[in-house]
Length: 273
Image 1 (cartoon, rainbow, N blue to C red):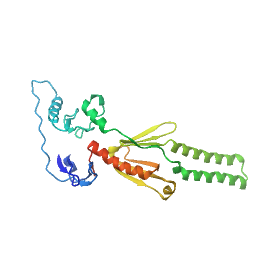
Image 2 (cartoon, rainbow, N blue to C red):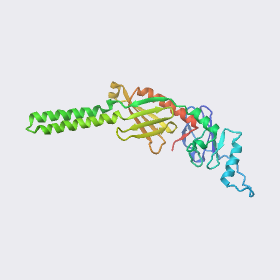
Image 3 (spheres, one colour):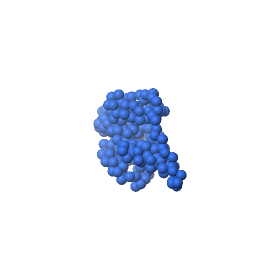
Image 4 (cartoon, rainbow, N blue to C red):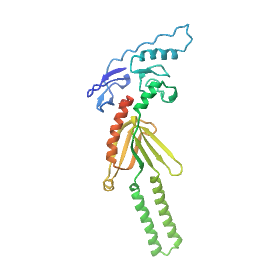
């Protein structure tokens, strides 16, 4: 392990040797920093289990780790027995999800996590129908073409009716797709609900967000909307774009602050690879 401090706020961190020389973002102040080269920290060796006591090595390691953690702001992972932070929700050694079975966690850890994870809603609602303007204009031209064909060419009325039905169907499907695209952004996560017959929900935890970007085109400025893109470390949904947001600038600024606060609550350090 390598121990170092943030050059801006002085908060100390402990990271693995593999992160030496890489760039990271401080969860306390958000400053960019470089993990220094350094000698690995000495790890406390665990005592061997007594032969007379019939317990597994894993069980003995957990007991030894809990004894050390009693006087520190740490705890022992209930899967591998390694020492981790008391507020950690995922073990950095074995990768186990410590909240997978919340009813088996110690009461004091659950109460601490509940206090830190009181979430509030930043934005909730469907995307703006202004995002469908291009599709609606296209359907209008198609419908107009149906009228022109009917007046100029000697074609059956049923042909023009088919053109109008196609334009109306495309416009209606586009309206439904946007109408039932619902965003729910809180201080802890981003949820995107899609579908008007079959529902699908995508979720992104705030502490996984690496960067937040705002995109407002010339047309978007006229109608008062914008797109916010979240770049994350999530393997399933690395990039999430929230489209057609009203007050997009306000949501963007709030998301930047809440992503740093989420990192601070979870003790997360994002290392650039």
